[in-house]
Image 1 (tube, rainbow, N blue to C red):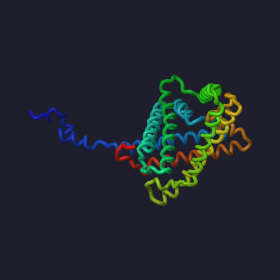
Image 2: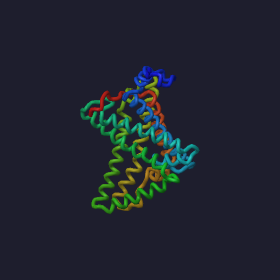
Image 3: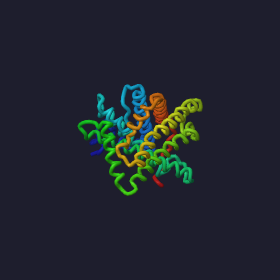
Image 4: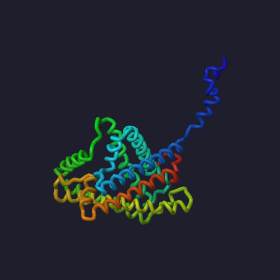
Length: 293
């Protein structure tokens, strides 16, 4: 008896099955899809944070951190679907960052500038892994955590750190590290050729590059309040001053020109998010041919 008779007719027999298996996406194609999905998710996060900060500048909402976007989405209609989709997208971006940092997916090489870039990509992946993890933690909770809970948790951790030997020095070091990260974003905004990484027409690349520059400047400056408050916490030794990203932005809003500064920063972060969405479509993705460090 011909064994193909046992195969459902809609599959067309063994030859059809083999043909379908040959058409399955390879590792390279999967990594491209992962990267594009991840860039889109990153863009959505920054667009959301920027929009919430803009509402805060207009006294329409209180600012929240990037991790606070998740609880906000969670409380909306179809919130679980939103959170799961965004979490999967961010984990896709984490995978892409790992391919860039460890396996040199961008083929930048191994000189000092390349190593510096890959280290930065690695830390970026870790940061987005924290945000992505928060998305799936929400699914195990009855109610989404609110920003005030994040502040209380941060202060508890800071109090524990300050009780350790040289805890204040470590806290100051964290603030300086955050300040350096912000400064590097501003430096990148000035020196980077963002259009070079896009596979689009020269005219389109020229039009969207300002979004990246404005976005990186805004992202860099948005770290400054948090960095200063971390340094202040380390100097004074008072954990009650330990901020979250949202509470640091709250301090900015209370300044005389705070709402204007906050509004400009919000628009800049939204520009960064918009450029990330453009990257999801046009970024030149070059997956590694093999997984060799």
